[in-house]
Length: 255
Image 1: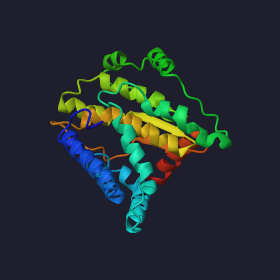
Image 2: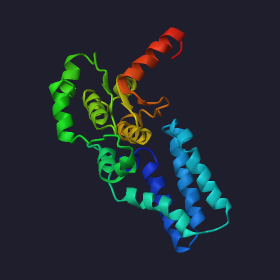
Image 3: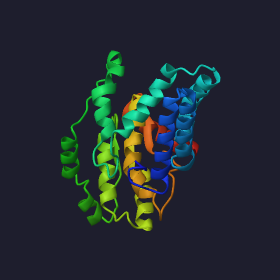
Image 4: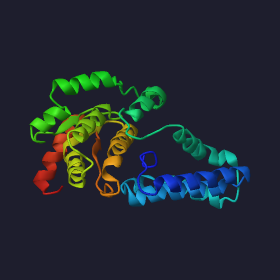
């Protein structure tokens, strides 16, 4: 997303590293490719979205185990390289649709088939219609003076509703201005909530929202990495459990 939106030096650096990866493939130096990919991932975690760093520790550990094994085997590197090649096929500038929701519905939901979680993907056209009907549109948000904006999806899955809500929050402001960009970030962090009984779809929801926000909060005038988690929670009993946690937190004085 950062590369395709030509922010900072991301485009130039990505092109350089892509060329180095191709050179290493020709030389069959596959472990070197892993180190390059790890460096790119680490740079994003450190400078753009810090909370992801903790979640990536398991992947970093796996990469180090492969590198330190001394076996320069393409089969060990292939899964990481496949992701790199796959992502390069697409253009992520000014993304308007919930990409991860479509990926989850068509390719990943089968991971949970045996658990019978009752997961269903809502068509984006239906989502947009519902948001319009309840007055959650950019024009209505402007009319309300950006008040009463909180929205919660109690079974958000990969975040199609939440992504679309964030899109309307973004459209309601002139994000070319630094002050407006900061307000968008605050509004999203404080007003968009998602719950789900499966953890993996929550990561996809987070990525979808992040993809929409990156071009706004990371640019030449406003380079502010998101250092707080988006309000997405794993739950066993959806709304009832969430309300109970909030009540308990208030009683105990915790946040």
